[in-house]
Length: 257
Image (tube, rainbow, N blue to C red; front, side, top):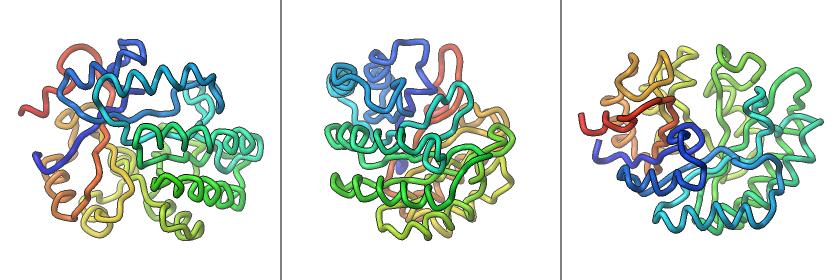
């Protein structure tokens, strides 16, 4: 596992702590990198809120390696604004805010979730992805497209790596790539080892949890020792985001096993 670099998704782990305390907790647990879903209620939070988050991350000595664009009300089931006519203005308002925060923290990956059906518009998604990619290029960042599993996200249209790659090809920007969330893809029946072997070097980002259950590696049936070995062999250079559910102590004990 030494060849793989991990980061902690602070939106799903360490959530027993207030957000601004989680970067330091991740550092205390031995991590030098973190990632986040968009952690604010709207696309343009007050500068004081942005500054507080930035200062918490910097003070902890960790790097932000991934950040979602505003994806709407995730707790209520929304899964992005990219392709939604009723959310497009909110997404566009967030682009410069998210890119600026990412640039200030040296974050090179920005995730743009597609949005739920009914009501998504493919042409709008492509236009918004191009707009986001062009803004992200100004800080040398990549915009990633993520497939989600339909069992937990029944209204989300992008549910396979093939569907994500088709959208990426249509956008036609060099800095748009796949976010390979191996939990979601495995739950949809994909051969994640084959996907890594074929495309791993070009992944924009990787996220993991075990299937079934979305718990830590080793809690389900996914072959994570082999997955990590294949990522290293494929030449994947980025971080692997820990995006699993956990309660109680020992969230990261699997790394010592």
